[in-house]
Image (cartoon, rainbow, N blue to C red; front, side, top):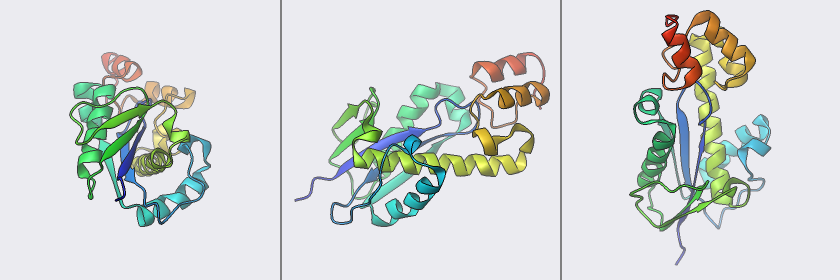
Length: 194
């Protein structure tokens, strides 16, 4: 009997805007995928090429986008952990074990789990999850750029680059900016909200 092991990872904890993306993947040992690695080590082109392969060949996968509102309500760590739990709960078939990138395990998981620091670079299932999460979030931010081009989301994906911080200063926050993050909160307190 095959032991179904899910890899879990997130993308987008540090940005000032948009959701945090969390993915869970159960790889199929009979359909290997070459080139899996930590999404940060891969080029955008390579991540985009691997994204549909992972979806086609995995036994199960799920991407959870945790909204800006939820991040602001419960904080980024708790929002990320909640997204990890929901990602695992959404998998069918259900995993027997989860390997979670990082040093924290979400509470109330549907299966036993281990936290693995640097797991996205050493466990293929976590690598696959990191790629799904990163590509899904990047695509979300590119779509957000279409409605709010003044922030340059297409370039920095919401991370606090000098350009983004300057745009935030000039234009104030948009609805997707995380109110609980200090640079956004400071702009709101300065009365620059749109």
